[in-house]
Amino acid sequence: MASPSLPESFLCAVWSRRLYSADGLATTDGAPVDVLSPGQANSDAGPDFRGARIRIGGIIYTGDVEIHLDERGWEEHEHDGDPAYNGVILHVVLEPHPGARAATTAARRPIPLLILRPFLDPMLEAQAEQLLLEPAESPPAPACAGRAHELDPAIIASLLDRQGVERFERKLRRLQARLHQIAGELAGQGDAPHADLQSGRHAAALRSTLPWEQLLYEGIMEGMGYSKNRTPFLALARALPLRELLRISDGDPGAVEALLFGAAGLLHRIEELPGPSIAAHAGRMRALWKLLRSRWQGAPLAGSDWLFFRLRPANFPTARLASMAGLVPHLFGEGGFQRLIASMGDPLLSPSDRLRALRAMVALPPGSHAPPLGPDRVTELIANTEIPVLLLYARTYSATGLRAGTLDTLRLVPAGQPNVFTLPLEHAFPRGRMLFATALRQQGAINLSKHYCLPRRCAECDVGVRLGLGGSPA
Image (cartoon, rainbow, N blue to C red; front, side):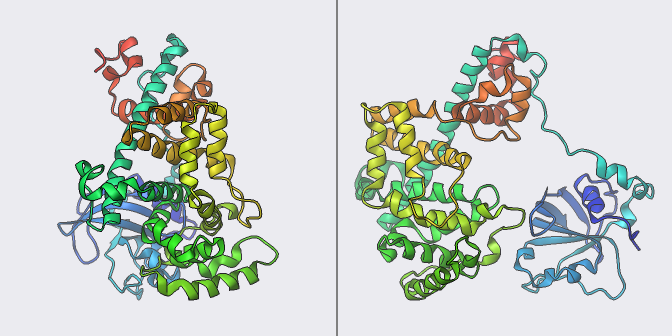
């Protein structure tokens, strides 16, 4: 039996660092196991590891892994009735337990069991405390770390600006592909080939603002999900598209909110919103959803699709859905999108005026009961959604004034919080965070880290070439 003082986090560390013998690794029913990837550790509710790739009995599975000290843990934690565990492909335990029931999902699918004890070094348990105290792996430093200070900071700033433009170009290509799909869906003929976008069968769909508004709607919805609920927010935006939301609600904010919560499968949690009369408000939302439900032909998401664990209440998906309900009539009603285009292309407005206009478009209207969006979230929505959509619109219609105004404004958008891709460069480059003061340069740092530093493409980077870390830049 496992030591009663041994924490489950010890076994998670063993699994993630592969501190077991792979020789003869097999499930309890004799199927050989080859761990291609242990998955990503999950600090939220749900399985311990997400996105693992494991060959079991000659078949490669991709899914989740759940860890327990012994096999009773699955039933004791009631995972057998929780749909959040339906994606588990392997149950990993330290010890067997006589009489324990075999693990099954809520859908009654049996889950293979791997008992790790026979594959561990006997001395490993004695080192458990040291193992758990070891710090998590730090982001790798770029090859130029320690020498970048030899360069003029202006050279690095120019590099980051160019890399920022390159990253936005990547985003525009993804947005354009999605725009093709939306135009085709609106025309009722499936995906639209690029050549059809401005002529032929999809011309009418593109001339309308609807494809652009749907693109903006999806981006803002995804941004409302922060890092933990981006997937269900985007799924909701596509299951309940903007055209349907506005048609059914007739632009009424209360009806918009009822539809969003009902389609999200979260009406049962609406009482968690702040406010002295939230119970009465929740009752009105349920009554509205009951009235409007038959006019929407889609299927609601499951409540289990949403993550609340380790989120501040202001960032709960319920709070952000309430925020979105306030934004939809403001941003997409009464020519809101056209006003945004006009403001950004107005040569009489300064970049500061345009930035204020972008912020105003994602500001909650007075009287909203939803928690206000924080300045970092507003900045993220501007940099990752509003500006890319505007740049794509300018490119599609050769609107040079709109493109110039948007790019000038982008240079004023402040950077968001540092992340795993930007921190190594902040530590390596002279003047640190001062170089990363704008969203454009922060996006440049992400692009540089992902596509040049991590794959060690120093020969294609100005910094690498100037420091003799590669040949001529491509």
